[in-house]
Length: 306
Ligand code: SF4
Image (cartoon, rainbow, N blue to C red; front, side, top):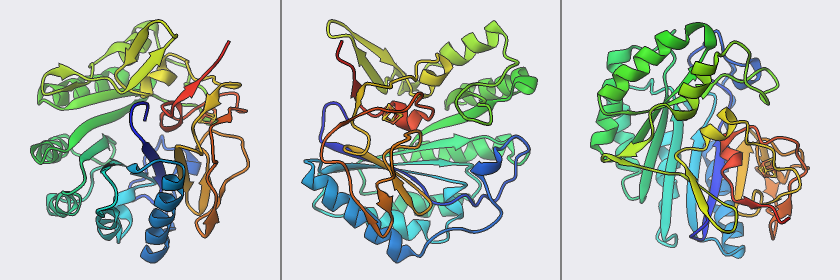
C-alpha cells in the first residue's frame, strides 16, 4: 500500500460461525445465518473498484473474515467474481477456522487461481479442530502456493499448551502467529500474561517465506526505516495510538461489517454508508480515534508530522 496504487477492502461477511468457542467475544459470532444475496456482494465489489479507481487505485486487496467466511454458501462464487481483466493486480486473504474439507479448498484454489497473491490466516480453535487434519490442510494450501499463517489466540490459562502445539505446526513448515487475547472492549490485552509470555508473543516464530524472513510493515522516522513482520505485533507492543495522525483509511481502504461500510473497524468516524450506498473519502483524513485496535486498521498507511 506504500509503494503501489493498491486499495484494500477488509470484509466481515457476517457473524455466523459454525464453531462456538468458549472464549469467543459475544459480539464476534452468531448462530444466525446473516449473509446477503450474492448479487448484493458482487455489486459492492464492482462499486468499490469504481470509486477506488476514481481515487487513483487500480490494484486491489480483498480480505474476508467473519464469523466464519467459509460458512457463506456462495463464497466460492463471490471470490470467482473478483477476477477481471481491468485490474492489474489483485490479492485475496481469508481469516478462517479452516473447517471445510480439502475438496472445498481445492475449489477455492481453482476459483482464485488467476489472482496474483493468495493468503490464509488459519485460526486454530482447540475445542473444535483436530491438529493433524488442520496441519494437513495448511500444507495442502501451501502446496498450491497459498501463503498460510496459523493464528493462535494465546489464552493465558492455556498459554504453554497452545505454545507447544504452535511449535509442532511450525516444525511442519507452517508459519504461526501468537495473538494476545483482547479484553471485552477489544482495546487492551487481558491480564494474566507473565513477562516471558509477552516476550514470546512479541518475538516468537518470525514469519518466513521459502526460508527468508518476511516483513509486512514499514515504519519510518524520516531518516531510517524499521520493519515488523506482521501487523499483529502492533497490539502486542501497545503501539496502536494514532489520534491526530493522517490516515489513508476510508481513502485507500474500506471495511465492510455486515451491511455497514466504514472507514475502518476501530474508527469513531461517521460510517461511509451501507452496501446499497456508500462514498469513499477523496483524500486521506485525520485520525480522531484514541486507539487503533484491529491489525487490519493499524497497517493502513498513516503518518504524523511534528
Ligand atoms: S483508528 Fe486506526 S484506522 Fe482509524 S483513522 Fe485512526 S489510525 Fe486510521
